Image 1: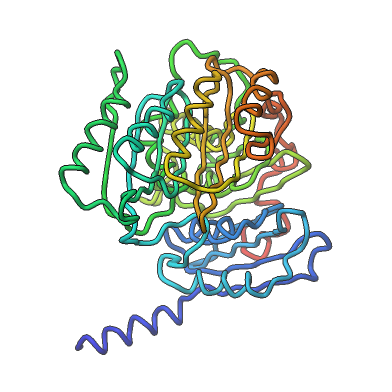
Image 2: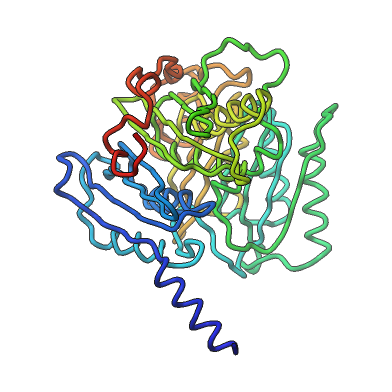
Length: 435
């Protein structure tokens, strides 16, 4: 068989096994129903959830099940305002994304290969002032931050940063400058008396999904382990992991505050831990969300020990918490200029604010920054501090997006109808021979 025949055969397989997408705006009064049928394989569910998440669709309910070699996923989605999806362009984008290998469609969460930027990945111990110091180093070295996302959780911090040379506006290619950037950032991350070795990686951007990459980096930094001295009784997402021997699955349940990208964060972590979701359900009620997944390891077996189940529980808790940092949301929107990020993070540091997460984007001469901040002790922000910052940079430039108090704690209760009734009694799955 020559190369032409190989290509034709590959195209035939893609056409036969390509996902089938059905959109229904009549089946539910309050949401658009999207059904996706895909070939059963590792990562298929994550690809679907990733596409929906990157299009900023809000999942109110979801059901997943498998039958033979196929997966069936049903998602009830709305836009940010709780309305049904009417834009045909969004439906076309979903179909195009899922029909293309590895979801190779540019979306809000994905960075495609570019020669205009240099990619920096940082992992280290979090502390007050760390982000400001990192930004100061990049500014001193004439590096312009184009996009960045930073997470902090359980005393670990991870960042994915895209930079360009300030003088040329393109990727940095000078090996000596790249080496200097890496050395100075390593020194900043190392800090004083830190027993953890920081990781600094500089490369040309390949195709990465920033959210998934940050999950992988935080997992590698073992942020699922709580630092010593932290209150073990503080409220967390309520996660259970137990075996279902009669079905040969491990069951994972999670009750937490509902928020955007919650399902993606959970499914991403299960996938990267090498588990396959065979059945699942997601239900949101007011501000709470309940998730339930029936999983096996990729080797075909459920979890084999209590230690493994404990680790799955800790990792799912961490996945839910990483993006749900407790603190005050701040948003900045202003004209972009070189050194802006360094200036803003310095103002935050000098006023005793500690960014627990940050998302930076620049486009068409404008800069948008989103931060979640606490004081340097991790406590709620004093309103007087925000007043002082507004005096320094203007109230219209930096806006408070939440109340000047910490968000509510994670709910601990779990809906009885699922835990005690069982997913396999749900009518949605009767057609798959599971009852």
